Length: 255
Image (tube, rainbow, N blue to C red; front, side, top):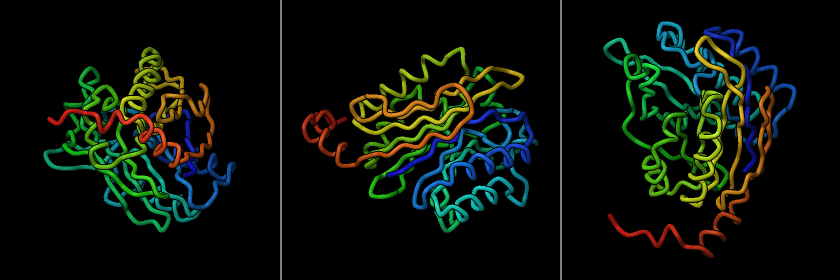
């Protein structure tokens, strides 16, 4: 499985500028067809509580852009979008689009970031979801979900082998980001891909640190602190071999 981690400095609440940034970055690397492109949480606007800005309109402009990328480069795309739902609120979601532009999966972030007021304007999701890609089962999760290992374990129970976390994780808690991603990889004997943003917004600074850990918790790639696209190859046989050699998952006690 081949994946591209797209880490960039989002312009605050500027959808068209962020679409343009991503388009340019992808065109520079010319990703291999059949790969996965991964964008951060709320990639089009930044992590804003202004739902009138973050939520897509009737034309679903962010989804149209994601589908354009997927079809042009013949890649699956995972990206953070905001979609309106009932009572004036919206959902902070990870959308997965296939290489032919079809929707494969939509996951709604389950853990609202209450210190930032996310629970006041966004509705929490209530289930983990898994999709198939290049022989792997993949589960997308979003930012604050990372602090709640129960969601990751549910993904493993659904057969997940790759756990993808898209985020807007601030610099002041950067150490937590890397340690928690590594822990999720070790305890679940899975590949973990974390894709974060860099730059700043009115509320925080961000230093990227998009990273991949293998099922033993070893770092495979690290994107550094600035904008860029990082490519990684994941070997499913290595995962299966480790799970067989060290059967921690099958040694769990039943609930």
